[in-house]
Length: 282
Image (cartoon, rainbow, N blue to C red; front, top):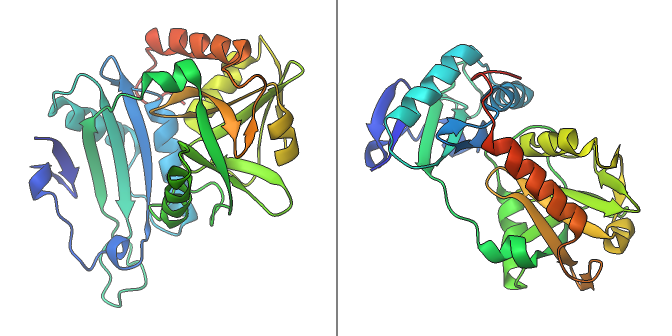
């Protein structure tokens, strides 16, 4: 059974509870961050903790922990679990509130460790299908526990046989996936949206790795450009880099994963295989 850290205690997952008066339950008020391990080490832990603090403060909650303290708690929680590789979810809740509305400066901290799921091999060999969904993140740049938009978008995508939903706005701009960031490759340029998104940690690693291979452009990306791109891929913590071969009714390129995407998959794989950064390096 998994072991979690819940508000000061390490407990078995089936004993992990918080009061119903917590604003995370009453109002969906809370922030989180999510990472995975490679060789049992949390990947880019410092960057994830930095983003967690930024998200927490952006939604109006206090953040009374140091990153060193959180890094220690993450490592201790991992040590109490025996998975070959793990997902780590860190949640800061709104805390209990007597008026069921306003935070009282008493956020709760939750750290959940679970087995890392294996992504389908065909995603990488054949590529995936994504649908577009007209919506946008409620609070740009904050990783909130409120995932209503993402849940709705993903449910619609799955009903159409797609593996991801990509957010677009009525003006025709592409933003991000419900659980991923998105990239297009066109004429040797690597393009990814830079505003209206949650900048992913994996996204930043890819941007750094791509500098020596592509002209990298962080700018507005129009849906028409995406559909006309030579290659498209998404990225995320669990997914790594996943080729996209179809968007709505349009096949991308020749409908197969492209060589540039394959190159970046290999570069990313090489990077994570040798990754050995300090726990809170940013």
